[in-house]
Length: 366
Length: 238
Image 1 (spheres, one colour):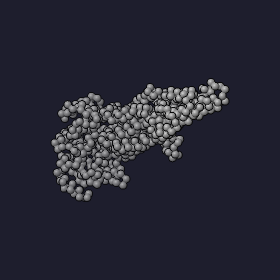
Image 2 (cartoon, helix red, strand yellow; image 1 turned 90 degrees about the horizontal axis):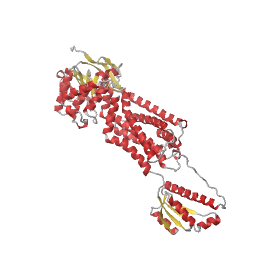
Image 3 (spheres, chains in turn green, red; image 1 turned 30 degrees about the vertical axis):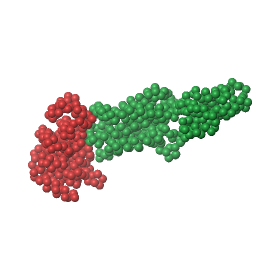
Image 4 (tube, helix red, strand yellow; image 1 turned 90 degrees about the vertical axis):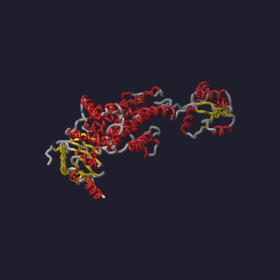
């Protein structure tokens, strides 16, 4: 048994490609999703068309620019300049103040700001829109208090729970953990088992007195250890580089991850019993596992917005349930009672995969 | 005729995969210390028979005893008594020679001292002590075959199964390989070997020739006139 585990570590550490997939890829993904593929707005270029140029408009402009969301690209002089400015593609938003802005506020208690957005990227446009409104509303409500004598206006205050700043890292980290546990466990184990089949060493192992179950455990154990290390590295990176907290119990998080890990491993074993070559195993885990995991699990796209058929499909994605679980632990900090159902689903899936692969395996022997 | 102890007894062995009959009523005995050649074209059912004898496959019907153990009742007990080397020499390329020996010694339950003693013994014999820390992928194929044979012998099995051990190896290495086989046989190990090469069939004490799941001929090579038998079988298949 120990001989097996040692042997497997030799395989892993002497193959630089395996090492890259095991350790390079997870970190690369975390940084990629954390820094590059972000939905957050930072330093978006905007232009301002100030038809009034009074104290209030300047103050609002200053407020906008002092947030780190916007950078002033230029001041526009007339409406005619708006379209050409967008066409150049550098600016994402134009803020237009109407004439006599300050005076209108004083006399009528009401003035207009027009926001024109480049919606060729709807997500960004939406975010910019709400950020700008947010800043202006805050400013106005402070002002209104000062003026005091103005008619009361109803302000809506939204509060974002669990992720106050709407950071996308918070959304990505649980997804990345899921994808990586899946990738490393399912894909790597299925590849390493089929590799032995291809080399003919699997037969040599099977004719030895070692029990098949020990062979499989020996092959899988190193990946459990390495995936677990990966998990901890990802958690540390997301904590200290991206500032993502773990609100709930860390032990519970690790425990649930371990369960998910076993699920992925048993899936990997199942794949390896089906496929004959490494390529086949790789293709199966890539296309049958990875893509659905990324696309259908709610990692990036919320499952609620999918067509009904895809929603049903997403239910058989183990990743979906796991993402719900870790989001609950990391962001909401709630306890086991809130996600025992999801845990049970993953547990049952694990049982299913294990029994399927045992069945497959014994058919092969008959 | 042969008074030696029977080590493999096969009686009316049948193996079916669905409608396909891979082994059709095989009956043969192999004696202790014998070199038994198992010949036949690809798809004749040789590999199926080896797998059954090694306890990897269950026979559909028939009696099979290997090293005195009934393979239907105790397939696991057989495994300790046999060694196996397949055509891909079944060793790990990304491990050193020594690590391969240690690993296979480990899975056959040898203790550390035995493993290192026997490893040294075989490496000295092969004159390969100097490469014990080399990765296997940097070693020529012919050497690997010899190493693989030593590994398969490491736990001193009663019977060693060789599945086309010399395919893709140069004639000199093949010759040396057969010397190793003879040596093992002299030490009382039974050798069960499959091969494609005619001349190798001549090295065996007895051979059986399989075609379409049946044993077409069995006996000493010089009595059989192998070339004729082969030609006849080849024509039948066509």
